[in-house]
Structure formats: structure tokens, C-alpha cells
Amino acid sequence: MPLFDDARFLMDRRQLLGTAAAAGFAGSLPGMARAAASPSGLDTSNWTPEYIGGIAGTLDVDTTAECAKVVPLSTKGHLTYWYVGPNQASPDIDHKIDAEFWVAFAKTYPNITVERQNLDYNQMLNKVRTAALGNAAPMVAKFPILWGVEFAAKGQLSQLKPEDVGYPVDEFWPGALKSVMWKGKSYGVPTNNETMGLIWNAALFQAAGLDPEKPPATWDDLVVYSKQIKDKTGKNGYGMVARTNAGNTPFRFMPQLWAYGGEAFDEAEANPTYKTVNLNNSGSKAALQASYDMYVRDRSVPMSALTNTQNENQDPFISGQLGMMISHPLEYSVMLDRTAKATGDDKKIAEGVVANMRYGLVPKGPARRAVVFGGSNVHIFDPKVVDGKLDMEAARAFVAFSTGPEWSTKLAWTNSNPGNLRGFRTKWMKERLATIKFLNVTTSMLPSGIPFPVIPETSEVMNIIVPDMLQNVLTKKMTVSAAADDAAKKAKVLLSGL
Image (cartoon, rainbow, N blue to C red; front, top):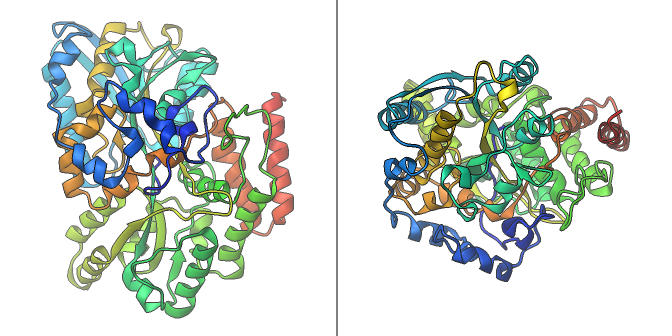
């Protein structure tokens, strides 16, 4: 599942220093001081759009030389690799960079062949589960940040840490490193990390009598704005996403739930144990009520939200039929791409929407401003579940190549950020900031993210239980309280292993 959010505000000691118990955020700039002296050369205590722009382009990288220190360039081998790559909805630049990556890897390691599968995001998880159970898993896979712990807990991943491929742990966000940990051991290397922002159409705001340059500051404001846009223009105000078993849903609803003070477990707390369930606390219910108000009471969001992913928000937004949505900087590239392909009156409308496209903070709530700390990690499977014999040297070469500052930056081009912190200092990051409008806003939100709980049950909770809870409310199948209680009960049963 993909992930990205908000812009710059107070940083969180717990989130960014990534202590063993960290998982929330409350904000303490002095707490970031230790990160400033890391091998990455970054001052993460000053993680503002201005600072990010100032360091970009200050570092030269020799990927070939760095990889040669890990695995000799003459190494012969074979690799099987599964990942979620560019699809039909991806902008052309994603396809271009993906192709360049494979050419560059083949040039760097000409004697390592790669058998790769580019899989659909909504199908990959179950396919990998099935393959691993049948001892037919790939040697290496790139997973959304949420998935890896499930396979580590089942004993299906090889232990893998950044040092195994030549990189100090200080070159990665502590929150990202936390996502690859299981029972004190590391089972992967971060490839990219991301947060999202609130995107709005300034022209629709103005038509609805709203300040076109000011997004809703709070989630309560967003509910009001969404209704006002609907009432004044007849267009949908907010692009709600509520599809079950689709990663887009928790990445958009959990920030709302956290903002009101809700949690799945205790992941937003300073010292989470993941042993308590808070899906039915007052904050969770307040978030559900806000969604009910938009979908049922005000009918200010698409009625197709029950089956929508973020992809289904793109056409309405580019055609001027949707006022607000939450997504990555990728959306700007997507809108440019769609505008370039449009013709006639559709092109004129699309050009107007792009000109009026704005990015800002994801709204805050009574408890906090929150966003999912997302991204992806690369993992090497355990030899016993791999289809054929695991070629560890080929796997290490590939992981070293793909997680260095060059390719962790390039492969994250439109919709994420480099997992390797040195990537922020490269010329490629400078080019991204210059060509991807609003990237600095979403990038500066990284310190504000909350990671999903690092337990095997998280995928089931976030992809099934939470969306089901939301749908039970939106369809009026259950009241807000009943839906929250039902979800909490299911989460407790899941935790108990029953």
C-alpha cells in the first residue's frame, strides 16, 4: 500500500528518534538532535521545506563503487524478484525510470540475471502468501511497509539489515527501520518513505465561497468545507476512500481517526505495546461520525466511495468535479500526464484544474495532526520458502543497488522519498524538487507520521477490520458505536489468536 501526508509542523521525538517503543508523535525539536550527527549528513532537527531544498544537490554519489564494496561486480548469479511497479494509472516518468533501473542494474552486475514480476498492488499480498506457503516465493520482494512483519513472524524471511548491504542504520529513518523489525531482529531494508498532503481545487473553493488559498485546518472544517462545496457548486467536496481490502483506505482514514484521538491499538502513544485495542474509544467514534456526516447526512462525497480507491478520485478531480482529496505528490504528476493526453474542451478544463491545484497539511483534529508514515521495504525470503535455491549474493547485490541514495531516490520519483537519507542530498532530489510541484510539502511531513503497528495482525486490521467498520457506518448497517464495538471485538479476537 502506498503512503504520504501533511507538511511542516512540530517534529516528534518518539517518531523520529525511533526508540524501541516509539510510534506516535507529539513534537519536540530538541529530541531530534542526535539524528543531526548521523552519517547521512542531515540535520533532521530542521526538517523544513527550506532546509530540504537547501541540501538537495550537495552530494555526489558513485553507486557502482558503493555496490562493489558489498558484492563484487563480477559476481554471477540469478535472482527472482516481485514488486508493485508502474501500471496503467502511473505517469510516463514512472515507466521510464523503472526501465532505466533495470538497464542500470544489468550494466552494474552484467552477470546477474533477474526474473521479475510487476504485480498489482491489490493482488500481491495474497499471491505472496500463497507462494510462500507452497515454497514458491521469490528470492527478493519489495513490500509496502505494512506487510513485512507478517512474513517475518511466520519465519518466511531471511534476517537482513542495512549493514548487510553496506549502509549504516543512521542512513534511514528510525521509524522505517522499526517497520522491518520482529522480536528484536531486522528482516529488511527501507527503500522509500512517504507521507501525504491535502490537495484541493482552488477554483472550486472560490466558487463555493471559500478562501481558495486556505485549506481546512481541522477535520471538522473539512466536513464543513465538503458540504459547502456540494451545496454551492453541486460538485463533490471530498474524495473519500472506503474500499475494503485496499491499502488506500487505511492510509486516508487512519490519519482522520488518529487526529480525533482514536487508534487501532496504542500505536500513537509514546510507548506502544500493541496489546490494547482502541478502535471503539471516543476518538475513533468521532472520526466515524465525521465520515458518516459527509457520506450519509450531507452526501458531499462520492457515493461510490464504498468501492473507490484513490485512482477513482483522479478523473473527477481533473475534470473539476471534486474539491479535495488526500494523496501523494504523485497526484500532481498524474494530473499533468492526464492533461497532456486530453483534447478539446476536456484539455481546457484539465489545464484549469492543474493551474488551481494546491497542496497543504492534512487537517488536524482535537488530539493531534497525523498522517501515516509509509513507504516500502525490500526483503530477502528464507531459503526454505524460495522457489529454487536462494542466491544470497545476487540478492545482496540487488538490495545494495536498489537501496542506495541514487536509486532509492529515482525509484521514488513521483510519489515518495528516498529511504536512504543521503538521497535527499543528491542531484536527483534537487531535480525532483524543481520538477514536482508541492513535493517539499509532503516531504516535510515525514517527521509527523505515525507508523502502523508493527505486528503480524496489522494487515488484517488495517485492510479488513478498519474498512469494514467504516463501511458498516456508511451503509447504515450499524450505528457508529455498534460498528466501533464490532471492530474492536474482531481486533481483540485476532490478537488473541482465536
